[in-house]
Amino acid sequence: MATAADHKKRLLILKAELLATGDESIEPATANDVATARPDEDTQPLAEMNQVIASSRNRNRTETLARVVAALARLDADPESFGACTECGEQIAARRLAVMPYVELCVECQGARDAPKGPAGRRHLRDFR
Image 1 (spheres, rainbow, N blue to C red):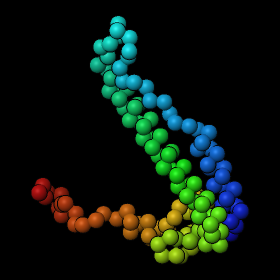
Image 2 (cartoon, helix red, strand yellow):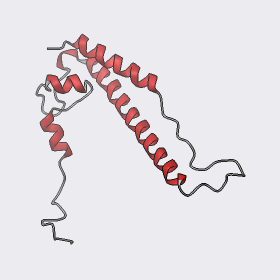
Image 3 (tube, one colour):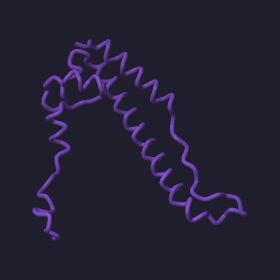
């Protein structure tokens, strides 16, 4: 079983990796040069897709970094209870913590949080309402 020192070491390594990676540059979809001001119709969708991908990766990196920092704060505040689910208090599985040392919820509580809210929109494949 991993100790608080092991978790802290892994979180610090992950934080350093995320900070070293930095944000991906988002290239403009159109060129600033007057001669090429009219973008090629074939390359425009690709440029826009690359912008969306880079933006998504940057957002995910920032969110993960925030979760790592929060996990380090939880670990410093109460190292004895680190690895316990913040909702139900049960111990988070060691394999889950090994993959994502910054998680706050056990699998059951995460599944309940991610479950769809309310009734499904369709009951049958042919139901178009």
